[in-house]
Image (cartoon, rainbow, N blue to C red; front, side):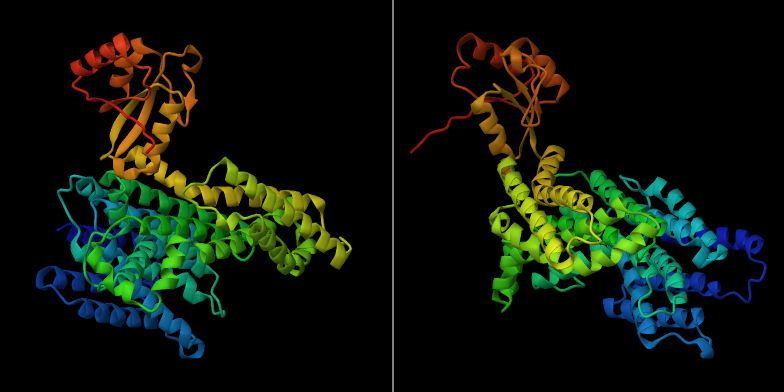
Length: 548
């Protein structure tokens, strides 16, 4: 009944307010959007009651989408191009089913829809008109009311009728500004895609990986982005909040595109796409299927290529660096110049970009960067990045001097570009390790471990815990008798005093297990540690290392 409440509240709120906003109701084309939403709601009710086949739902959404596109642009003297019509119809059906697929965890689809509808109304309000802004605001209000009952543990669910209605309203509203741009490439579509990043990303992620795994695209399962976050150890609430955050970041990226101009801020969208891609690659490595499901993939003729792209990342790294080099070089110009100066110097950026790409890719390859593993990225790898970026910047400067005698170029641009590219490469390479550390720290399945002894053995134990997620051990605090280490952080773990601080530290950090890291921790000290742990029913272990 949650879907019924959402649709009813949205339509009633919209019908009550919109006459005060737009008096010329009958002549407005926007009426087709709430009608399409109601039509998809009916399809959802039939599916909830009669269990329609996936094909029936797909055909229904395409039919409703086609009539919606016709209603939004039906003037014979100004008809839509053929490609716009086809893409718009498929887009409507795709967004409807994206929200339908996203409804796989309590509070997820409704919360993401609030974020998406809110940013659509805020950023595209002038293009979609006051009436549709009211419709989106009414939808947000209905969803916020629904979330009160749908938050974990949920007592009310939206069903297919609710998710399809939400998808239809948001899809219809997103089509309006895009269809108004009668250009070969409607730039507003970039804004719409960025705002709807969560449902689109989740749908594409699931469909691609199911296809690679030899599974049916319509077969349900726990392989969505939210499920993989839970498999990493996050709670369901945390997984939902992470996807809320991704949606908000997408909306803020769209805001940056609006404020800076879409065509000028394309590198911003490219960097956001890189972020989403990195998250997708990382989550694709999280187990979601049984080994039997990958037999079709292993027999595929593309298996060697896919294996290389998945586990070695060479081709992916090069494409990523192409994007980073272009974006950083462009941002360097925007940071150095503004106004008329920017317009005067941008042609030099365009003309020199191919040479800069070649010089920097060659330098990064020569530095050995592509032989480094993302999962073990460390300070030694940063030195490789610095060497590669420095050589690339130097070769770029020499090329500009040779081909253009450095006329129209700025030394400051190359300095800013080098710094930005260094930060970008380090951030992307360290992303996998950072995500693994965050996932391990937030995992609900991992035992919270206190390591007694912050010396070389203790640091080695912490490093191994983080390198082996199968251990399900999360180091949260050190105890060490050396007063020079107290109140310091070692390997990201705080040191909280000596033996007399053991019990308070165990209580504060909710420790599940104590590890003795050094053979020197024995005698009366070990006896006291075991007594304190026995009172709190906390196991104590000593890890031994042997060389065979």
